[in-house]
Image (cartoon, rainbow over all chains, first blue to last red; front, top):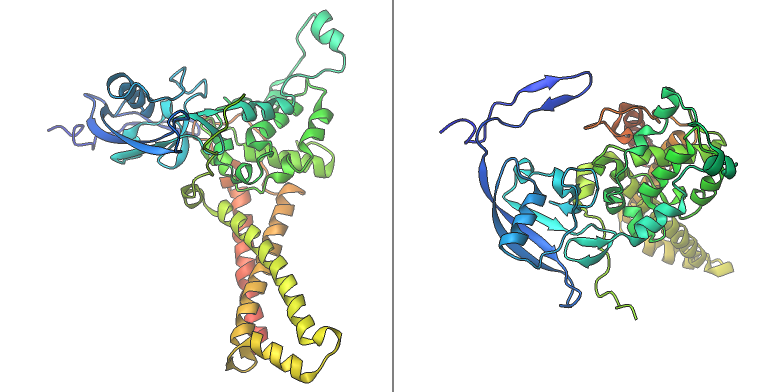
Length: 271
Length: 158
């Protein structure tokens, strides 16, 4: 039996400037049987949530989403979940996997290290069916912070603009970190304050409020700060930092919220 | 007519709090200490008012009420009631103060807030886990412990 089959495969690392990339084991895939324990909900069935277990064989290269798709194809066609790109770009397949909000397409059961993989719908969201949840509130809050470029002269912006608004590399770096948000809702799902205050805008919307307000091309910061400077805005954040720890894109919403608080308290943006 | 939802949204997993680290626990203690201080303020006012006979003080009423609240004698000035009151109120006040001061330092003065930068995705370290903020959390905890020790010495030993 080769070392790869026993799970002790040699891992090669390539050091870059700041990060270390661990390459997956080479050679033939390692197959294992997992039990997917899925928390399901069917509005037509009634009676609230119920659990179903599925046995599925997956390799070390396959993700939880691959497993769910296999279950839907071969075992239970009624299982519902949302997905699109399968590569961590669209942010559709957020779910609670082994107790932590994660993207199913970026989570491999092999890496989780457990034989039983529990899958639940995102917390803080109303369920639609099974693992698919309703994002209406989430996107309504996102829209409420006006996440777009606001210019004082709209005629110039929409009709007479002849060139791009200039931006230096340094100015780009002031908000780029927050522009990586894919709206997957994992931070919103992990936030305890969203559960306690249903009207709280949540880490995603607030991070986007900072992202657009910190953009040098934007002139609508005053409008956004008015929205976030409220009981349901930044002041509902009690700084548990969980949002930043679960973000699959390392957006760090907790930093954005603190920068907004600092901006509101001192009257100027921290640079 | 829209169908009424049979199932409500569920709260975030408690397991997240055990994975996260200090921030979540500081938040829990901040909330709990705030609640304790409010309850303590009301209870303390009620007990003292009752002990003072609601404007008609007498030694008998005072001794009866305070004696009941303090409970059995332990040693020196310490009763079971005073020790519990001391521990709960002091822990709540000191933790609330120390952690509140940490939050003011971070959010008003920006201590430990890094500048947004082009991050090293994937596996960038979130600001809450960076050393700039970590030391503040440890200082807050150390301050709480030192205050507790000093207060214990002042109240019961010195």
